[in-house]
Length: 212
View 1: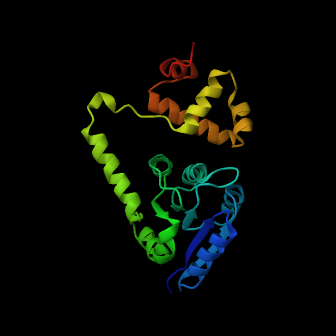
View 2: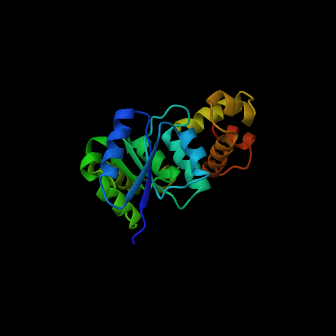
View 3: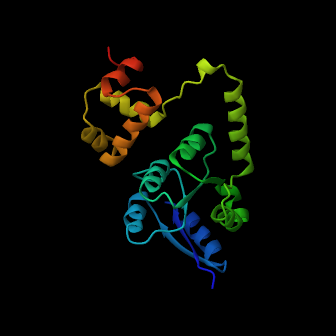
């Protein structure tokens, strides 16, 4: 007997959450659970881990990109597919950098949801056509730039954290102000150091011109 594919939906809008659950429950071979926020899902995954997570981005509390990063750090075997209305390039690439395995727009999810989940489980990286086009265009633009221009950019959240570091806040205080876990802040700071090729706060502030 083929094992069920366990899918978890993390979506704060009840109508969308229930609609996706209906589609998945109507398909043989699938089991579905759902959560209205990231914190509830992360807590539940300690006891029972899904094979696939369908992730909204604009969630209350921990957003979908942060939640994706935490899932991938704790349970790298879980496949995460963003399922969102957002299609701006920054959100797409932040989600992919956080570890997302696919990216669907909600307007097309109803037609392709089941097949996209199957593709994901079988090793694919399903994306809505407009998202795939943005990814390809971005790679073309990057490839055309001179080497010296390809300095990695910090994300909006990483810049926000560095601003607070520059004001003298400790990691725990930053976590409280941004209502995220201390682990999340430490992970962000690790990525900041990695992108800037520095080893400590002072070097990071100096390199970004914040240590004045």
